[in-house]
Every structure is written in C-alpha cells, then in structure tokens.
Length: 400
Ligand SMILES: [Zn+2]
Ligand SMILES: [Zn+2]
Image (tube, rainbow, N blue to C red; front, top):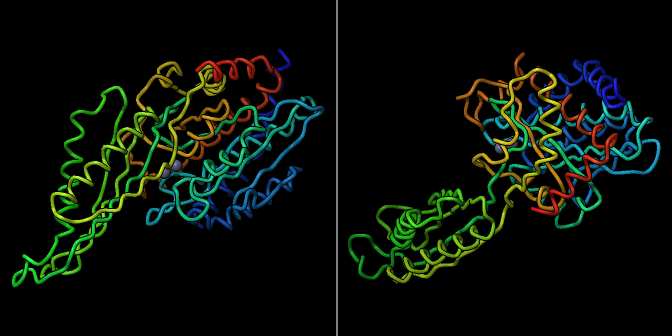
C-alpha cells in the first residue's frame, strides 16, 4: 500500500465517522432554507462545526457577512487546496438546487482531510461562498472574491453539486444580463391613442427582434437567450408609457457573449426608434464560463470511480455541452478548479424544483453526499501528498 492509499483510507473512514453529523448539517439547512446573503443560520452552523474541529475560521470575509474561510494547517508550509461550500436556497422551492448537500460535503471533506494534515505539508481551506443563486448584496460571492484577489492565494479548488448522474469536470456557460427600459407616453387607449407612445409595443418588437437573432448565432458557442417582459403597463385602457424587458444571455465563449449582448442592445434601440419611444439599456456581466482542467478532473474522477459508482468518463464531460451557469466559473478562470456532480436522484428530476430539494434528504441523496464527500476529501489530500499532480493542473491551466 502506498502512502497515498493509506491517507485515502484514513480520510474515507473519517467521512464515515461523520455520517450522522453530515445528515444533521444537511438536514438543518434543508429545514431552514435561507435566501442568498441571508444565510446566517447556515453560516453559523458551518463555521461552528469547523471551529469545533480545530479549523481557524474567519467569518464575514471581504465585507460579506455570510462568507467565511476556514483553514487547517499541515505539518509544514505548502500548497493551499480548497473545497467550496454553498448554502443559499431559492425562493419558493427551498433547497431545490441542493446547496444543503454542497455545504455538508465541503465541511465533511475539509474535516476528513484535516485528520491527516499532521502527515502533509500545506493547508486545507473550506471556503463559504454565499448567494450562488445571485440574491442580495453578496450575490455571486465567488465573483466578488475573484475581483478582490481571494482565489490568488489558493492553488486549486474543488466542489460538488447535486445532480442525477455522477460526473467530474463539467463545463458551465458564461452569463450576462441585459435590461431594456422603454419610455413612452400614456394616453387614453381608445379616445386618444394618437397622442400616446406605446412602450409595450417597443418592448414586444425588441422581444421579436431578439428571437430573430438566434438564427445567426454561432452554433459552436452554445448560445442561450432567455427573457421576460417584467413590466408591461398598468391597465388595458391606458397606453403604457413604461415597459421593461429582462434578458439573460449565455454562451460558452465569453468574448462571443459580449458580441451577442451588443446585438441585443441593438434590437432594443431599433425597436425604440420604430415606435418613437426611448430606451435605457443596462448590460451587466454576471458569471464567466467555466475553464475546464483536465488533470484536476482526472484526479477527482478517479476518486469517485475508486468507490465503484457509475461515472461518465471525465474526457467526455470536459468536452460535453455546458448547460447552466455558476459563479464557480469565475473561480475556474483564476485557478485550477473542478466541480463534480453527485447522483442524488433519477434522471428526469428537474433542477430548481421541490422534487430536487426532497431528493437531497432521501437515502439515495444522502449516500451520494457521502460518496461525494469522500471523493472531495481524497482529492484534497492527493493534491498535497503528490504535488506533481497539482503542478500538472497548473500547467494545464496556464496552457489553456
Ligand atoms: Zn441553482
Ligand atoms: Zn446550485
């Protein structure tokens, strides 16, 4: 048995010892869902647990009250490897994105790794990142952390996300928002329509123009445009003087995303001109696309496969179609970073649903959390025990 195999055996045992506690942590967060930037109970529970386990915890980092960083130092100085926790819920569907499991797995993996740190150089860091779903002032905390240089002191980061299949190394789309606020003139809809300027008509025209952009979209760039008309008038007998469109634009190519955002803005300007309205356009970059890391995905993948679960080959995953967006994308643009998916439910369960929330607390969901926690813990110690793997991940990062 190699030194690394011994370490991996120990951290897996350490995860098994925490089974009951991890069920409690994930269950408490499930029962007490908190929106982004308001995850006070969750942050208190997680930081309390990490302090109890001997971590040095910094709470409320970078001006975000529910963000934290918890460090456990090894025998000597060396690389810093991180596991990331999320713990915000969604409005209406509670933990429909399963962040209660992300939180418990990060703490479980960090604690398990800490048990062997006396044999390793370097540090394990559990990073608490609020508001992944974008709610409130800490919305997209990982982006705020990226802008403030937080990730620059970390050598690699891993995490997991509940899903219906096991995967490692999944991609994600960059996302920008475009808001169009049309201004017209109210008037009696029957008696004096000729004295009005219908802002809703301008919004409708902008919506149609946006639909027409799709045909000329670059097919390799995984473009997604989704939008709503969030304001469209107050009463049907008043010509609306204000209408607002909110669009999300996503692509796997960050530069192309900017090009498409400009085209959406052009649609709004053209529609306003046609209707004689004015428009205010607000463009906002939200999350960047995920930069995949082959060597890191391979390490993480091996630590899932070693537990005998069915997991899609990582080579397929890092080249697969990116589906959603996450602020973890901004982490991956700064340092080698890889996420994994754990099979908490059967394929066909929608993400962001009550069914997904419930799945996190089933036997299958809880067992998947344990498998994921072990894979994360083994990956943390593997990167510290065999730093050449970390070096390969860094070389890959620099070369792509
Ligand atoms: Zn989500
Ligand atoms: Zn999520």
